[in-house]
Image (cartoon, rainbow, N blue to C red; front, side, top):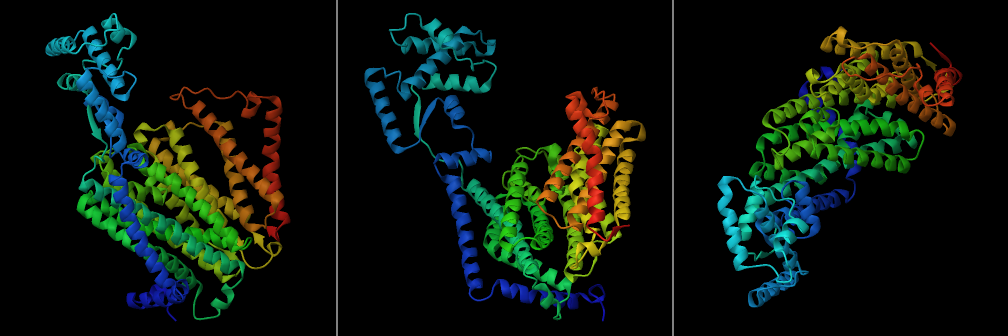
Length: 622
């Protein structure tokens, strides 16, 4: 029988449909399809209503959101420059109108009222302007100020207005060379010390409202496709694994690859159904009022990031489902996905030109960045930076797609239940190389970056992906761990190969003469990498308990510390950084002899204990 790669395209699509049908049908069984469709329409309508509310609402929350999106300037600055008072409510507006009437009739107003306070600050601006010599071009404004003060003098209770307003209540913001301050001064003169009173209204027009609505709908699409869809597939697979219900399914026509494809498509179908109206709103708003060119990275990144996140969540759910119930796994997955999304929104909304490469490492960052550039363009990135971001987005799509395929193959082997590694050696090297490429894209500019920073930042970014790859190289199966041998030597040699590729690439970029090297730094780095590899193998090969989990956490903390120590020694060896390195090869001796001894003891105990645990908990190490 031909395999999937040998089938024609139509047959492969039919096979994929047959694989997805039972899982999608289970997701939408009964009246769930109607309920999900109703929820989808409600979410689409809600995204429109929220967008209109945020665009034209007059509350404090709506104003803060518009300022956060750089759609509205600070109102205090606007009121100060325009010499006006903006009322937040109709009642406040009526009270200010009454004060204006009182000012017109009596010629004065209580200086402790809002209107009186604004007039006092206006007097301060006028007298401060008189006390500062203006440029020759603005000499006439001082004459206008004197004429205005002669017609509308301050309170007679002030003995020396010039000293009182220019020294005691001086307007320290006033500067003749600032256009905004000259505009404020001219507004005070034109209005003859009587501020304008207006009722607050949103400064956005209809086009801005369409943009905000599109941004809200797009954000909802991202949440549904990168949280709801992965959570559905990951929790379902965790339940199947925990309840051991995958074996009966394998007895049918469905192959392990069909099961993974079906679970993936069922989650994407649920997220896609819920997100469909909101996605339509996003696309229409982007075409009508957005920066249309930014639709391309959004449309490319959304499916690639969704499939990548769904498969990654399934991989995590499979591992956790063997130990915990689906409810606990769903809670952990929800927490992890939400934390990653919050982190990504913070970076994506404030992506500077030197941070564009983060698009390649975190899928939500790229989507949030694409949405921001689609509906709020040109605020932080120039044209060249936007073009670079689009190139990084295309590279990220290729990388996410390739990594998703590798994760799919790993899950397929795990579901088969045979004692085997989830990844082949070739797949492991391909995954390590892909993550390395994506990590190097994060480096802003190699011409302006020191070799030490580039090396350790990129190595730190690939540390976690490489641990996952190494875990995938450990043979696992349904049998007891004590009956399996662990190819620890070959796995550690593969890790050495990953590090050698990384080092070779950095040396090729910076040149061998610009890469600092010290014996102490190399020792700390090799120790951190070796323990990192041992921890990755330990977490997959052996069952865990409370003591084992605490020791793994201690080992990971030691890896982070030794990694930083290696960076300190490398920085000290780079004469261009002017950094002073520690005297002792163990940096904690610099703080305390006791801490230094503890570091020295842990340096010996941790790797020995990890190797001993692996040898004791398995059939042997080869």
